[in-house]
Image (cartoon, rainbow, N blue to C red; front, side):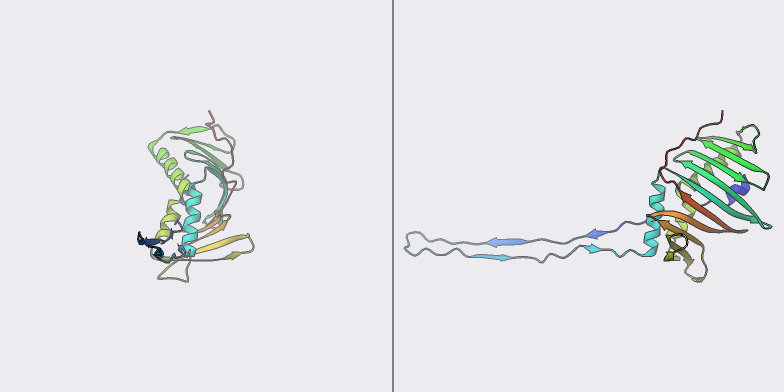
Length: 232
């Protein structure tokens, strides 16, 4: 469980302002008892109307917007591959129904799998096809809460992106058919702290360095309808 949590951790608005006003100052004078009427004279002055000022979106703005849109989704599925050291990988699939229902199936090795279900404050686990066990310790509840927080809001990723000390560039990822955003520390622009590939305004892939290598996440089925229930 701790190994699983170690590797799971994965926005701005366009400002439009406009100026415009107009004023007119009509003045007229008429004389009575005259056979020659005096023409009314009107003087008008108009203040020029400027077009709306549109903020130019930077790659960083685009990525922040994608993460915000991710936070606003109601559900998603994802596959995860994470390096865990000594050439081994953690491979799993997850389903998440916000705000508090989560299911994960994790392949610990070629012959062992762990399944997790979180519903509200209740955490359940089983290994392979054994009986489900409810974990009721404070550590287990904290583990479940941390997992929900990470997966529901991508706080760690958002915090990195919003950091003033990072820059973001973007390019087309033709292999995965998405727009790739790479986050770089300003003092080490050649290094990448994380990459997020966006499709239709939402993260489709996230590539995140971890102490043992990389964690790769593929998101899909946003706002899909499915059921996550307590096993007993």
